[in-house]
Image (cartoon, rainbow, N blue to C red; front, side):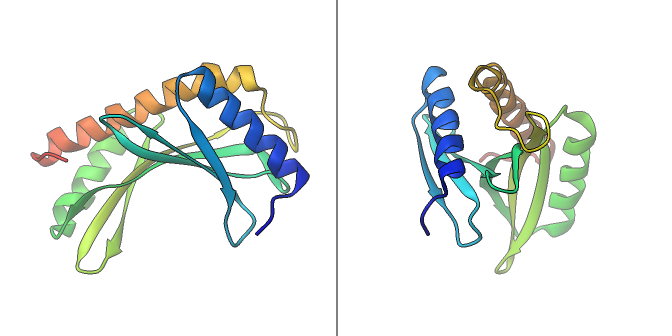
Length: 149
């Protein structure tokens, strides 16, 4: 699917902000027209940002997907609850993936006024903090569940 002009503009803002904090991102759109910006961190893994430039450009979801798999649904759900209560900003969730639970972490945020593109400087100032909050939530999850990822 081709990108709208507004999606291209928003992608440029995110990719430039990521570059300024030392990360390399690439942008694409999904079947729904949502903008997806993917990037990797060495020794951590892959992240992606989801945004809808045309309908909700001020909203961003940063996701660290599928970092943990387990067949023990009760343990996973109890641990998710502990992390979501203990940690600032980060939200962990699980979904069924075959016969296992796949756990992801993310942060959602409004970064501008209604129907406005976020300022690159604001993204530079906040993305590192968001990534740190996700990493902290993942670390608490691993400690609480008693395992390694």
